[in-house]
Image (tube, rainbow, N blue to C red; front, side):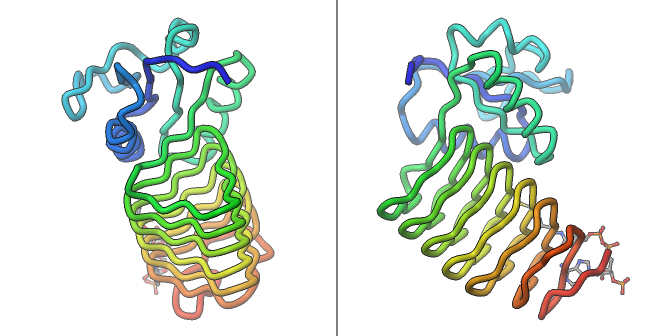
Length: 208
Ligand SMILES: CC(C)(COP(=O)(O)OP(=O)(O)OC[C@H]1O[C@@H](n2cnc3c(N)ncnc32)[C@H](O)[C@@H]1OP(=O)(O)O)[C@@H](O)C(=O)NCCC(=O)NCCS
């Protein structure tokens, strides 16, 4: 795959900021810049916001492009547009993450410090795997999933596309979670979730 020495991160709020932190620590790009629509922000962590998000097409011949917007579906849409436009999309893995053998990580995914992804797990495209999360062996984390800090998934878990897994939650072994699900902070998921919705509590139950 083609590589550029410059990285453009789309979105400067929580996800963009932590993605920039991981990208800086990788020491791979000579220049990192942001695109952001909030006119009140000019810099983030000393990195300049150079343009509005809809100007991204100007940059795809010189920069690798990482879509780091917080909303899973909006991130998915722009990531797909970037793929169609032929953008070079990197994966961003903090050097303090631990990545096991035979792990696959899709492009546009960010893995933060302290995250552990154990052997034979597959992480899709455009995912966020936040600080200190652990994904055990043989998991399938589908595209555009957000795994918040400190989540633990046991072995052979599947988490469907666009799902959002809240801070500190625990997913037991062999569990499947339907696409578009939300798992609340601190939930313990002990049964398959077959219908999208919001699930919380110990054990997790549908609340919405
Ligand atoms: C699950 C969640 C998304 C639901 O948000 P919401 O739709 O706004 O839900 P509400 O606040 O209206 O709560 C509805 C009910 O569920 C309960 N509830 C909400 N979240 C809960 C949780 N995590 N655990 C247990 N109960 C929860 C509320 O107490 C409320 O109960 P009540 O009707 O008896 O008062 C949210 O509470 C949550 O846990 N977010 C995770 C935040 C997080 O992980 N942030 C990290 C970002 S990286």
